[in-house]
Length: 169
Image 1 (cartoon, helix red, strand yellow):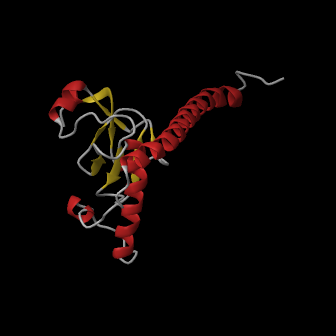
Image 2: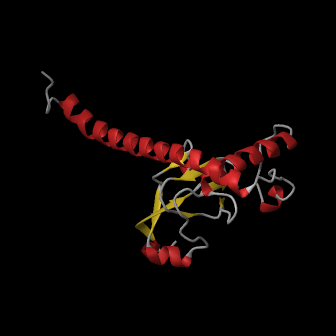
């Protein structure tokens, strides 16, 4: 693990970082040289990540651009809008779980997705559906950003309140 690659400003998504469903912050961050040397590219906001090892089959939606580690897949499409991929992936993972009779996955590999099919939807319908879903995802991202800000305010104020440094009157 090269020191120059870690501690940068680029979020590095791992199975530990799965949000509900939005992920804005990650446990680890990498540098530009780290991104250049890892097996990931910088995925855009809205990319769906599926955990393939560890907590297998969990889905995360990138709320900001981020890279991803090798224990996850980044799902993108030139046909399906990114705002809809998450929901198609969720359906696929549910189907895979049913086929495994509810068993816990040890791992997911890309060939597990091959037999799964999404009903063909006309591009105009995909576009209209995306027009409805995209603003809802944007609201979810804004809410998550506000939650983080509120948690930071709480974490800075609470010790001062408990120590008596700040008094409520």
